[in-house]
Image: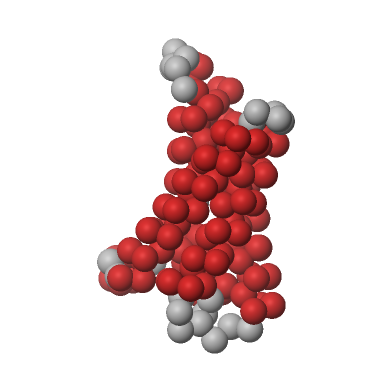
Length: 138
């Protein structure tokens, strides 16, 4: 990818709107994981929280980011789910690796699940934006 392509993709109002709506969805994801973790394992809570955040993300992206999308709803939802299947895999892997391997190895003992999950949520932001722009909401 050329530098111009990346600059054009990420230096736009649409990407800024994606970051804001994605931030709201990420907060939903993070907050719901804290709640779900009261009744289930950390690993399961990450997955269920991701689904909760994903629903919020879809609705906000459709309403505020990709407003000119001509993609039929069924295609939009299908591509959104496929892209987010890859993203949840990234989120889960990063969260688990940080929580159970890297952070303890670095001697970090405070807020380990929270730090790991927050980093895991951030990892797929850029790839998800491109996927949603060119497939989910084209």
